[in-house]
Length: 373
Image 1 (cartoon, one colour):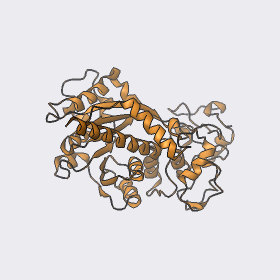
Image 2 (cartoon, rainbow, N blue to C red):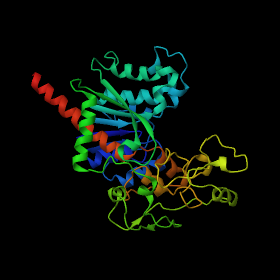
Image 3 (cartoon, one colour):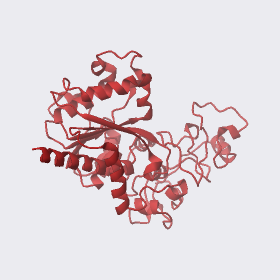
Image 4 (cartoon, rainbow, N blue to C red):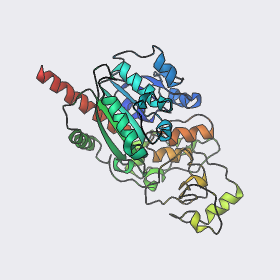
């Protein structure tokens, strides 16, 4: 089946669908540097580097171009929306990213679309924003008489065998409405377990990054022997990885890190740290999952990102492992860009699960349609 990835980033969401045999025909990404990583890791995909607004108003997409549309429009517009949601929600200029995603779905009319977003989407403005999103996709007047049936789930990365306390909202829209979403969700878990028994097992930081060797200047580093099923799952079959380079911290930062033990943070320091993050200067524990990997995983004040035993923050490869990126995925660009690519990505293990769920939704929908004919 064919899929289109909007707001594609470096391609975390695409990866799972590709692993499951989908053809990503087109990916849209606004940031040129991030799009470069997508292109180099997904040869054969038509990557459009442009504003979604221009894609929407052009003739890039037409009806039936894809079976599935995936992507998560950034929610800045939602968070800035007024407390009172007016009838013009979809035309509010602050929600333009959502509107253009919506318009591409309307134009292509895929059987299923997947929209990923932050957990806070469910509670923004007392849930009114989320209701507006659901009602937009459910309104036949806005979709030429062909509305989508919406299901959603708050997913926790740890439940998918990912060593990270990340939570995200997954919205699934389908032209079909003849299936039990919760049943298909559980069936998908069982099917994957039959093929990959350890897929959903709990994973710790040590399980994820324990076999990575020393960081290097160029990021190319030798691996030690794989110890965990998770390391084997992400392995590229070689004994080297890329992007395993450390941040050059100031002497002050290194001195601070040296005083912090496993599981502790800035509160262990006898000084005032100016940071908005409650977990600033937090050191990871080998035996637990990490906190959510953000775009600032290379910054001690950005959260709990200090290596369990070394006085440095996570390397890009360590952060990518915690995000469930396979070892053969290479990140390109400068330090800031790579931080965005990894921190903003949908963990590929979640996207693979979603691709399997979409298979079931489409199969169930088509079977029912054929039965009723």
